[in-house]
Image 1 (cartoon, rainbow, N blue to C red):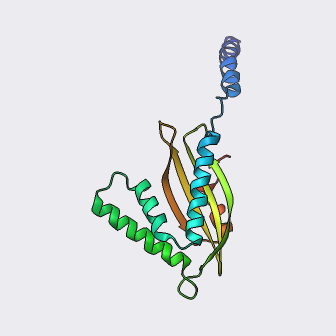
Image 2: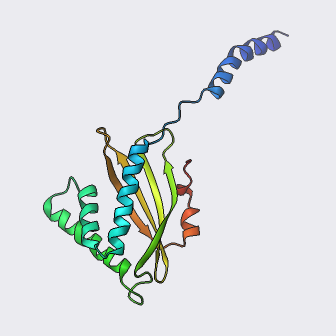
Length: 171
């Protein structure tokens, strides 16, 4: 009987804490509309430049964003690397499976849970021979300016890419 009474008292002491912990939900944070708009504009500019064949301009921008702490030689290597990869994207088949850009769509816009300062966009670009998936990750700096933190493009099938576990952050 003593043991039962002790269990009831112990349970009743922790029940309010359990209920409070389950019902507490922090205010959801998301990036500001201004940050999202700035990032959308940047992506639009990238695709416009890609359609116009301005791969050097895109490579310079990516290098300035991602290589801001690099020395001049490293920046030049990074820029040349990005430019050659971008040149291959827009080269016509049979050189690559892609070719001239004919359009793009936003597939996903996602944020880290409760972070107003880190987010990503996933686009699909349509080329003369095949689509390509692009992922842009952005960081909102303390001054409110949006900076590219990561960029990649993937040759994976769009359905495979979008089903990867890392693509399943909440929106």
